[in-house]
Image 1 (cartoon, one colour):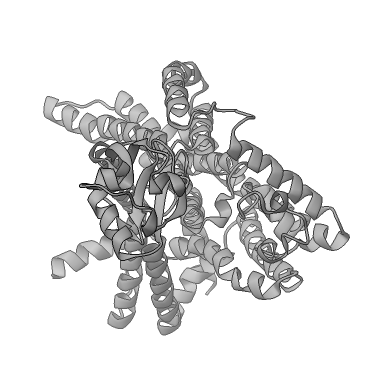
Image 2 (cartoon, helix red, strand yellow):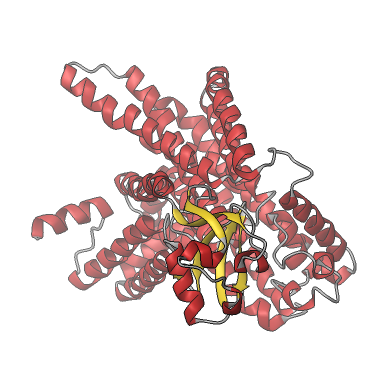
Length: 533
């Protein structure tokens, strides 16, 4: 046990002598690890770990005041550009709070401030990082954890799910409920369906029976009435269908509740893998390995493992059939290669071209749409929401400056003549810039773009000075830059900032990149602080 704690303290960089303070730091770092492990899977688990970790960090801050406040002083001894970043993050949140007070539905908007406070994850990570080794460990922990759902997705696709119906007769109770040929019935009254017999049992016990079904590329609900069941000797005859099979076609969503969330998280973590792959590959190429065994080990745990991991994540992202996230990862990878070595752009293009073509074919077969398809319903929906958003934000000076308030649209959409008079499903504006502009006002949008610029500036400044080292920590900063570009790109078509699962992974990645980028300055600033104390 003592040996384990000693190694744990070395990893976390815990040097506190006082035993109670040391245990508080250990617990906080333990919750930090747990947050990284659960972030690719569950917002409930990752947020619980984050909040618990913040709680123990705050207790430790006040319990061991002298040492902990010296750590806290690092936030304010960064060079001017990072002070500007911190100031901008808190100002953005403060403006969000102001816009919530001026909201058309302040009760709703103020309640949504809890989600906007997810940016504090950034500070929880930075505050509990003390060593480069810890940064590498946490990055790899999140990658390994993500591989659980990445490997499970194709296995789940092979196994299949639900009851896909074929040969529906016009008299079928399913046809009367407006179910079509090829629909995959997933649940009946909340219970998963594995066979038609499962469905019959639910229909006979309940009236009506609420059925969840998948029809490319959304999930819908219908009610099936018991009195519409047909006479017959088996389930197929009673349901009025000729055959059924397990469905093997849907948009993968990992362990999250929605495929877009999974796709956004995947593209961020895949950027992390690609950044490590790029720098590790160059490092292996320059390394002089003496023995064959050492050479095999180095290549296996670097080049081949990272290559397999990235390929697997790309395949899982393909199964989500989410165009914006796929494009964002491509843009992210090209941005990283452009910063690292522009000569590699042609090689990356040659590799990416057949992959992109294959992805377009898969998209066409899975969703029956092109990559940029003006006839696609989701594209039309986005265009409608963008038009409504721009109209709403410019209707009055109040709307333009303070916005209408977070989620106030859910209450006043009829008065504001949105969602095509109710013909379209109620939702958000499917664009982070548009959503911020409408809900929080133009100043908030400028602040958000300024924050993204400061993140990028921090990463590029560090990469310009350190890029020739080709160490793993360089790869993490490179990945943070690529993830930033990817997050902005997909945010043009997705409200990814409002998706707490995605925002958490984004701020985690930003925190890793910022901490490494300023590691040397933190040390020098800490020494200067101590000398002045």
